[in-house]
Image (cartoon, rainbow, N blue to C red):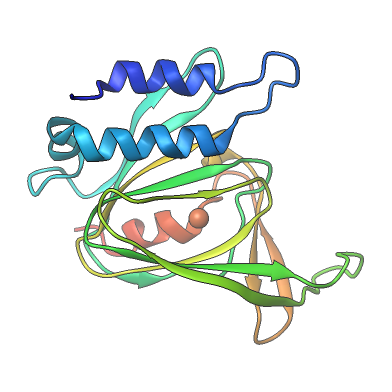
Length: 193
Ligand SMILES: [Fe+2]
């Protein structure tokens, strides 16, 4: 049975704890899998061959603030390791695949600009699969030309500070307000026709 997008959004809203206000991102991850696996109309409309390249905001929840985006990448790219600041994120693969690498931070963050990180886990997201990342979790993505995904974030990454890491130089830098999420958006901006 088709899982309607409206039901998906309602289920995401219900995944927030009324006491703490925290989202159950595993529940949201499972909802996104169900959406991608059952609602081909939704997937084709937003991530099909005719869907426009770029980052498109599909839905922003007025009550909880989560945002659903379609990311349609014309060109492949490997991002640097990065986090999403205070926000959680779930990545649902719609077309092609994304290789995810999760990184673990080893230092205590007390030295300005210094960070030591190591690879913790790698896996491939195939169509219909969804990965989840909590606040400040560090990850790196690699995808090929024409990869398409649906991403849900807890907040607007384009207006919040996030961190980008360089494991080779043991450095970390803050990506400032408005240019956050450079890792995914940069792929669009630098290759837009
Ligand atoms: Fe990311």
